[in-house]
Image (cartoon, rainbow, N blue to C red; front, side, top):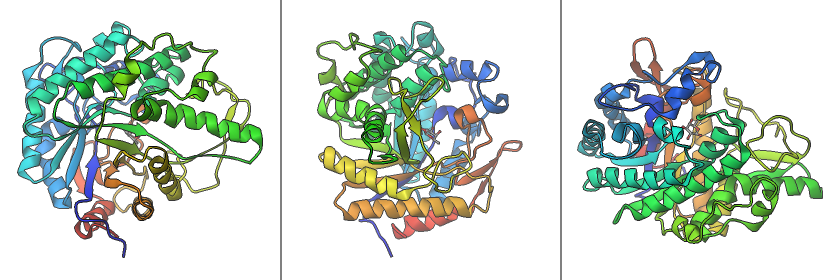
Length: 440
Ligand code: FCB
């Protein structure tokens, strides 16, 4: 039997646009994802988050499910366009009231609320003014963070500023696979910097809070020990992991990454005090892990998410894959955690997302096996001395999986999108057992 220390936090995660629906209710303004979904061909099957899992209306039922599972914490995100429909100025009280009701219901059920302030739904009017590539968006984000913090600080202790700024910056502005759908490598780098700056400014704007940021990190290995392949792995590690980790935790961009990117940007958008702001002290780092990466030297074609690394090819590691096509490798998670502990030893870690898409509906043996392997990988990392404090499964509910629409199901709980009926999958019952025993 593998058990975790008492106090190890077991949770599940979701995000606003993926589950809430109710996009035009109670004064919510449009977000870049509403716009992106409305553009033909951007999202599979023309799906949108307009209704999603209707969580905005069904949250009491969803919290009852969380209680049934025994969750210690629930990670959700606050939709900026509900709180500030135009991304600036006076708060929309009805938006704040929704999150207050949700938080109160969680607390009544002994579930810790873990809000994330930005899980990709930027108010459209801020995009119209230039979006994350513009410095002003970072300032607006800090203002918004302050509003939400003031409204909920009496009942929320742990705050996450951003979810996966890599996706916002590079999928949003380099490949265009995510909203706002731009393909401008230089703008992607400015977006990355202003997301980081927004994180630091927001951390400062929430006095007394326990603050963290969630990054999507991965374990990168080269296809061979040849110099060019090792260099490809270094580049991808730089552009996926260190470009965010180093500014936040070491107050500097990695020099090799700046060198790799020199032909795209001179980083003239970085102002004097920015790195100091970005490295504002934080209390925890959220790690989202799904799959490892195997890379080698090659000639990629088409717009790459890894701007400046066009001579890198992603290789097949020969492992089995989930239905979304991501390779399954729990060892990659323990390797990643041990590496984070080695390179950034001071910061406590939480897995803020980990999970799998499978088509197997309610009898989801594949998901159970995925989760079991990764929970074991966490235990291995803890045994190796890593300060890992909790684990959040992605996701509580089936939901709108971004450009894949509703076809990919990540939930522990099945959603019938016709009736909005919730049904616990086998994995939900299995996870409830893990939580009860705090282990496997
Ligand atoms: C992560 C996102 C989350 C979800 C999972 C599958 O990149 O943070 O919203 O889409 O992937």
